[in-house]
Length: 59
Image (cartoon, rainbow, N blue to C red):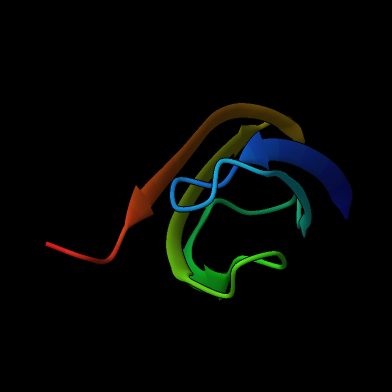
């Protein structure tokens, strides 16, 4: 597991999350500050994060 930091797209606070570097993932997690849902896309290559995309679930 690796810790990565990014800015919440709802409250703009910096938050951290642990990601499994052995696989690429798409999942939904609530912001630890404002509790709004965030869609998170991670892509790893050789256990190195090469892409982290954060999206709102709101349309």
